[in-house]
Image (cartoon, rainbow, N blue to C red):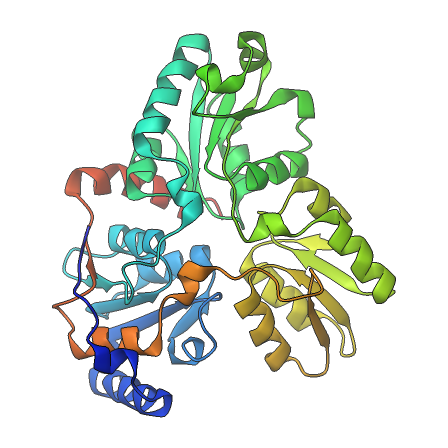
Length: 361
């Protein structure tokens, strides 16, 4: 749920320098009453205006621990602001400057489909304890489903820990919505391939034979990130041919074949740290969203930073939706527009699942 209105034309055409100046003025005037959170994939001009920049896990911790700010502005996508709303105190107000910024992956796991699939699984696995685990990239209703069914939420930085957590509490894991993060987490824990199945909600029993469901330790929802599936093993091989000795780091939402050929794989925070710690003169090819790669290239002129595809790699259009004008319009109308709310009944279960996530580390 959110409260928002159409951004007036003058904010869409505002001069960049003027917008930045006015945003900074709001920051000076409000001081500790306001905090701006910016995800790594945001536009270059927005990131410097954030009080905190990071991946979804880090920003979730910031939101949960924020004690002073009344206004929390989340420059990211809907599920992130929604999670911040769940974690913050009731009197705090959470804003999403562009409420149209969603997540196609999150939309691949609708709550009705998950509930229907859960019912099918439970009928087949009546003798097994199944632990639901939802990736952070999901709606609050799915997080609540996990909280209400002894499950947990995870991010790309702690998915393997969530799996370990789940196996201490049950025999099987039902993970959604990203099959690739799920598969890479399984590989990290050395779970055999014949104990992993993909669940297609459009098919009866997820498109699986009953015996395979019973033998599976991990059931992975059929979903993906439209950005990260574009990076292929061929891209890794070509980069190594063009730049012998190049380092390759990718996000774990990439396919398992791509991850297997990379030098390292991890969350956006991991990728930032990997590039930061690499020696001067390093050639580093990165498999993730273009805005972060471009920003890292600017931050480290002593290193050659490449996008893994060898061309303009995929952009997260939803992350790119948020503009300086959107942020300025929100700050000019605090308490009136772009407010994120979560149904109290949903919030209770979702909060439980998110608190379990924050305890994993």
